[in-house]
Length: 627
Figure (cartoon, rainbow, N blue to C red):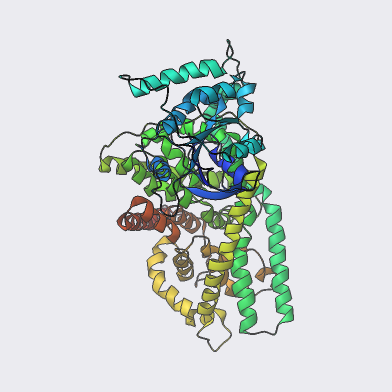
């Protein structure tokens, strides 16, 4: 008996088959799309409509190579197909998404879906790339042999989507007994034999292999010497561009911030309310928003690398490096994702089959310098080099910062991996996609979403903490005109006095220690805290009062009149922020993914202690050497 027309459909396919691209084309969602495997690590739901107006619920499931779960993300796929995910009904129909240019590999999962009796449709994706490589596809023959509808599509260009929706509106029959299953035969062997015969009929390759553009590029980009030179060069150019290209819009934001502060000062009478707006809200939030152009550029470059297909090549190059740290190449993608934000990086570890390797990867993921650290780096690095504008020197220092955090993470991973002991190996399997033009619509959506999230954070958490810090640095009031005495008398001054003995061996004063303490909620709060806590240093003129936060901090003095921030104390501060885990949402996600708060608390204590003693070692060693 046929099933009724479906109301819930699930997208299933190998990693990098284009499921999320198809999901976006069907639902109009803004999910992140990367031209490498391992992006979708949890179930995503949306809605679409058939050409005749029937509403369908669409589930985008994590990529998997088989329906025998070997990793947490593959288990999510199986549970969703069986209707075991709370809040999501069992799908009425499965849309198997397969890369037409790698059909022989992708058909294995399609056959497993059919064998389990799920009504399904095969969405034959990337037919344009397959045909350009000389592959001769016969969708009708595929449909006849598999016994299911086959629809050729090009999801990234929206081609074939209407035809796929037409196919989804019809009732589907119960799956018949698969013809490739023969009595007394090994299931895997008979399945692979059927796939070879089917591809020979319906996906014929040319007699002579045609070298594609991707093949020619890979000969250079995957070269054991030139590939690494290009990889390091690409990373350096990204850092240089972030510093250099962002200087102009940062100047615009700085000028706007100064104009806004000046307008408020001229429009309001002197008093606590004006001080709250100028020194609390504008200085605090502005101290973070000014770095928005650099955040935007970071996500833009990450999006370009993902969408073009280069990210998969970087993962291939890094496989050998990861092995030296006791990890497989599967750990590279979650760790690279952590450069943008540790939370999706930690979640992406679900693609790792080995439980112990997954725990190690979760443990070191926050040491990949995330975008929340960038405002701190962009504040300190120009002060360290005595430069206001972007330069290759600043890019080189930023590159070294990232390299130091990554190298330390690998060393810790190697030690921790040995302590956890051996377990089932996690084999590294990665689809090597063809190079493609950037998918600008998805990249721009991704950049917009990430940037807006950063702005919202500035408008909520950072704004709230800025107001709180202003109040703590203003009250209780002190009778007198000396701003230093007023700060010491305030609540924040008293907190700083308690903290100062702890941070003084690192080269910091109580105000810096207080800013560090507030940034344990979110790292970027450090900048707004410094803007508020050091405002008493700028009383010379209005222009200086409205200058960049780095100018204010650079002018700070110790009680004896010497500069508070020397090159040595700035390096000490950088080292602390490279290693400290200052992100409560990350700890919450680690507890969920690791299945225990003990792991999250242990990670927090270890990374915080490591940051303190590393900073202490740098500063005290530097002093002994006379720096």
